[in-house]
Length: 256
View 1 (tube, rainbow, N blue to C red):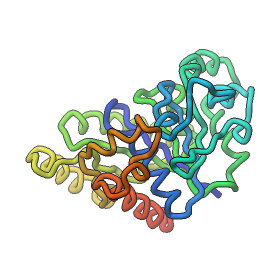
View 2 (cartoon, one colour; view 1 turned 60 degrees about the horizontal axis):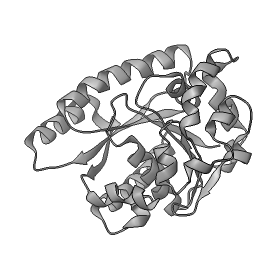
View 3 (cartoon, rainbow, N blue to C red; view 1 turned 180 degrees about the vertical axis):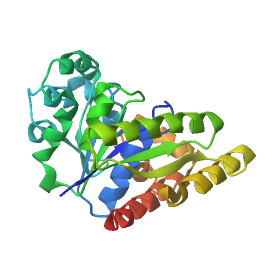
């Protein structure tokens, strides 16, 4: 049975897609069977995995509205070693269509149930907003991985996200919980980042992953080559950190 995790944060530009892509590659490198679900109409997770989003025969959009299934739609990321349920701009229109469908917030959960036995991990890259797409991700997941920068505004956004997760847990998905907070784009030379990191540890304790992802140019360069940073430059500090994070995730689910 696959463990399904959303990579989510209502604040944009915090490294959600970078985390989803590189965690997928890091887990795959450690012999895990991984499916990455791109739930963002921008399709950046698809592109960063080497999938041509401009020429898709079918995407997660068709899966959500019942025109295709996961097996027929998924593609292999040759550069990352995992499967991808890709997305493109078509997905933006699904918000309107989903409103009139039965079980509209559980469409993704129902679709993923068909391939549950084929994967160890399913990672869902959510858009940076509380939309019907994000709600589908949260209803399908066992938990949420929250990538965040150690800055003041990130703390503000975190409280909103925690409240959202509590509401979804209470009303739609009793399995849902925060798996952990991942500190990303971290620069230890910045005093404020150290202070915010300390605040997170004091408030959330063991919910904060021990792995810290440093600010790293090579991770930012990798998507333009259609590759996860983990595979683009395995020796880079950011790549090594995501490999460590993959190992930490494997250990963490053993005690879930």
